[in-house]
Length: 326
Image 1 (cartoon, rainbow, N blue to C red):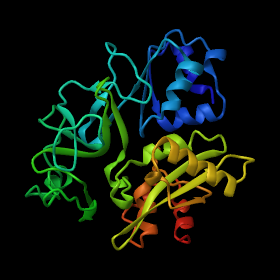
Image 2 (image 1 turned 45 degrees about the vertical axis):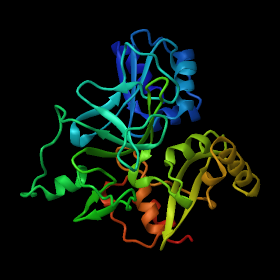
Image 3 (image 1 turned 45 degrees about the horizontal axis):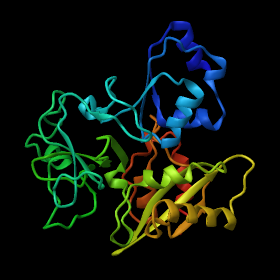
């Protein structure tokens, strides 16, 4: 597990790009490069793929290197770039992305299409940016392109659920404004951005909308838990939150752990964030490039066809378990 750290010292690497999940795995396996490597050339660590947990900031600065810039970045393959990311001129705050990047006029909008600070909302980009795609192949009239980023699913102030049209995901967005499908919050004091999860994976029990990353930040701080996936089970107008946990080696899932998890979520968030059910799972589905697949699990629990292509999963067999629960 030290191969990357060895390479940094051997090749005098200055910028090291990795994934949030990989940093979590390093922490779980008690890999402490600060004790075994020099890393004198390393100036920047960039993390992407999924939201970087606050505890991963503690790990990097405590167990990897104290004088390094840890930059969590967020964007998309489709824009060949990032909307928000790191800056050498700004401080790093635990659990936050530092700023919007050059050329990106980024805001957080609430359900009414108003910019908000300190509140949860959609990540939007208000102006064209240098790497913005201008269309899709095999989309001569631009319908799929507009639906993917610019279509407005709002009627008054009420949102509809994300859905698929011709295999393209129609996300919560606003007419004429690029909406990338990330649920976020901007800290009014630091101006830092917190990515709370994908918009199509947000949870909305009893009219309270929140991101799955808010649950993961709490649940995955438990030493007994190796990984988790939190999704909605939708039946008619009823939505229930279900949390699946993958246990670490030599640990036991039971009523006592379930109670502690619910208490922690209730204390750090609210009683409305507490999952209706907490269950054990043997595996969590991930894409080949290391992204947790919440939508497929949600659709299976809700009795919908799985839109996600199995060929894009690193462990497609993991979905079999979810077809036989609830």
